[in-house]
Length: 119
Image 1 (tube, rainbow, N blue to C red):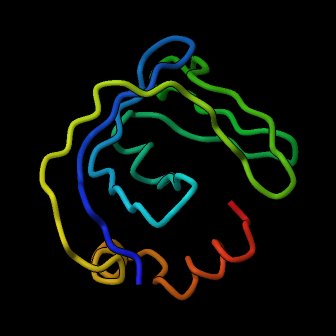
Image 2 (image 1 turned 45 degrees about the vertical axis):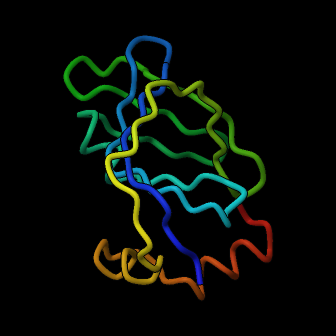
């Protein structure tokens, strides 16, 4: 079972403006960070374009590119420098509980992804 130890917000620098991510869950058992595309778009008034070779995060109003990254295999790794890490609360809630509340995959799928090193 994956446990969420903290929930907070982070700010990540991009080419033009920072990206703000809220309700970020710290799961110490995961060795890779996972990103909610919907939450990213909601928090930053942006849209994301995926194609076979890259990902582009664009601001909605003017369409300027905030971040562009190449795909690697079947994933789109994004490397950014994040600062202003703030935990709003510490939890001892199971990951399954949070994933159920948020409509995300449960621990069985995450464990399979982790086992196959797909992220």
